Amino acid sequence: MENKCAFCDYKSAAARKLTIDEIDKLSVNCLTVKFKKGDSIIRQGTYSTNVAYLKSGLVKIHIDGPYHVQVVRIVKPSSYLGLPTTFGDKINQYSVTAIEESEVCFIDISLFRKLLATNPDFSNQILIELCKGELESYQKCVNRTQKQTRGKLADVLLDFADNIYHSDIFPVLINQEDIGNLVDASRESVSRVLSEFVKDGILKISGRNIEIINKNTLKQISAKG
Amino acid sequence: MENKCAFCDYKSAAARKLTIDEIDKLSVNCLTVKFKKGDSIIRQGTYSTNVAYLKSGLVKIHIDGPYHVQVVRIVKPSSYLGLPTTFGDKINQYSVTAIEESEVCFIDISLFRKLLATNPDFSNQILIELCKGELESYQKCVNRTQKQTRGKLADVLLDFADNIYHSDIFPVLINQEDIGNLVDASRESVSRVLSEFVKDGILKISGRNIEIINKNTLKQISAKG
DNA sequence: GAAAAACTGTGATATGAATCACAATTTTGC
DNA sequence: GCAAAATTGTGATTCATATCACAGTTTTTC
Image 1 (cartoon, chains in turn blue, green, purple, cyan):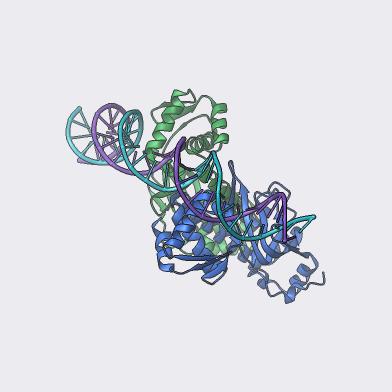
Image 2: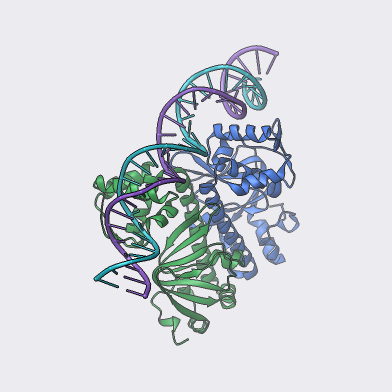
C-alpha cells in the first residue's frame, strides 16, 4: 500500500498507541476503499474477514428485524465498524451502508489480533471503545422502548447537531423511512412530527437541510418523552 | 483470602487462561460476597471500584429509564457483571440485583488491568465476551422494539427454559412487574398474556413454577411476533 | 427536459397495549 | 397464625401510533 498509515490524520485512539514499527506493518496490511452514497460496506449474514475502520464520510448500521429494518445508529469517523462481529462471531450480525461518500480501511484480521496480543496499550484502547459502545447501546435501547415518537425524534435531531455535525444547521442524508427505522416509528409518523416541530417554531426545514431554531424546547421534548 | 481461586469450580473462560502465578495473585485480590434475594449488588449512579464476577445464583441487570425501570437481562453464572462500566465509565450505568441467593467475587481493578496487559490470552477472552454481549444486546433491542407482547414473552420463557434453567419446568423468581420490565410491557399485559398461554395449553402454572407444555407453539409465537 | 421513480404530506380508520379501578389471592412479618 | 403487604387477575376506557389510501412533490434517469 502506498497509503502510509503513519501519516494518516484519521488514526483511531487505539492506533495512536502503536509503535512506528507496528504502524508500518499496519500500512502494509491495510486497504482503503471508497464507497459512494448507498453502497453496502458490510452485509448482514456474510462472513466477516477484515476489521473495518471508517476514515471519512458517514454510515448507518442496520439490522434486519422480524418486521422491518432497524437502523441501530449513524456512525461518523473515526470509528471501527465491525469490532463486535470480528471477535464475537464470524458472521456479520448487522449491515453497514454509506449514507455519504465514505472511506473505509480494511485491516487484516490476523495482524489486528497480533497487535492486540503484543501491545497492551492498543488492546486497552480497543477494550475501552467496545465498553463505551455497549453502555451506549443499553441506554439507547431504553430510550427506544420507553420514549414516544416526539421524544425519540428530538433525541436524533440533537444527536445530529451536537455529535455528528457540530452545528445546528445540517443536511439530512437519510430519508424519512430511515429516520423512522432509527427511532422505531413509521415513515408517516416521522413526517407528522417533523411538521409539528416546524409549526411549533422548533425547526426550519429547507430542502434537505434542517435548522434547529429552538434547541431548549427540543431538549425538553427529548427529556420528557 | 482463604478462598483459593485455583480450586474454584466456577472460573470464567478468561480466568482459565491465567498462569498458576496469576491465579495466586487473583486469590489474594479477590473477595467473595454472598447476597440474598433482593439485595443490591451494583447500584446505578455509584462509582465502580471493582470488577464483579457472578459465581453462583441469578441476578438481574436493570436501568432506570425515563418512565420506569427496564430489566436489561437476567444473568446466570459464570459471568462478569460490570465489565462495560469498569472500562467504559467510572460510574455504574446500570444496577445489578440478586433474584436468588448469589455469590459474587469482587476483583481488584488494578490487578484486573494488570492481567489484561500481561496475559494476551486472558485479554482476548475478555474481548470475546464483551463482543458477544454487545451483539446480543443489539439483537435484543430489535426484538424489544419490533415484536409485540406475546412474542416477547414467548422469547423470555424460551430463554429461561433453554439458556438459564436447561429444563422446561422452572421457577419464576421475579414478579410480573419485573417480567413486564424485561419485555417492555405493563404488569397487567403480562398477566393477561400468561393467562392466554395457559388457556391455549402452552403453559402450566402452579405456584411460582412454570412448565412449558407446547414448546413448538411457543417458538412460533416467538418467531412471528 | 420529459417520464419514471422515489419520496413526502395528510386525512380516516384500526389496533395493541397502557392506564385506571378494584377484587381476589398469595406471601411476609411479628 | 393472623394482619398487613405484596402480588395477581380481569374488565372498561383511553391513547399513541400503525396502517391504509392517495395526492403532491422532488429527484433520477436516459
